[in-house]
Length: 230
Image (cartoon, rainbow, N blue to C red):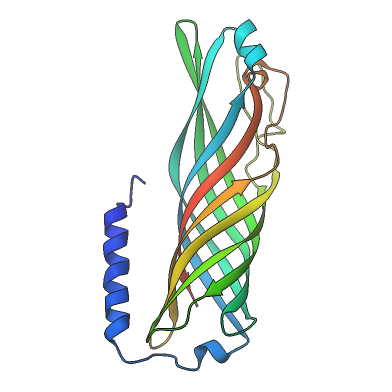
């Protein structure tokens, strides 16, 4: 990511874990409560898994299609339901994520960059498995289903060969999986988490123009680093 260095994130989390492992136990009855609420701050790196159409590439003037990804940000709410000592059910709704991806088309002697910007409203239902608590720290893994609606979809916009657009359908669904740490502070729980999100359905809106005809299928993907506060 361009605006957050990975080693700074790792160092920050390491300092927190070291402190939590040495501090006196905090929020000792926290995990006995049935439901918790919180919010999330996120940064993401979104990309597109784009499959080209060999027949179109061979017959048209487009020679190659590559994608480039950019960092984005997000904000959302969470609801956590305790199922047992080691299991939770987590609802992430709503989650708003702003992302950008570019498709780079190479022609005979020229190139064209088309931006695809999205503002996703996401909802996720996740199962969380957590380790035994060690003083003020738990390790956990999480995974489940995800649905997204792109509030900034350009499907309905006018397009032509002179004003090309590559649009993604507004509704997509898929899965996500990741891991994180629960760190207990005196008044709240802080959870840094990394998660991988993958779309299952084909998100490409086919408009009949050369830019979409060069593609067989497009699946949005995203790596998300979340800071949860409960």
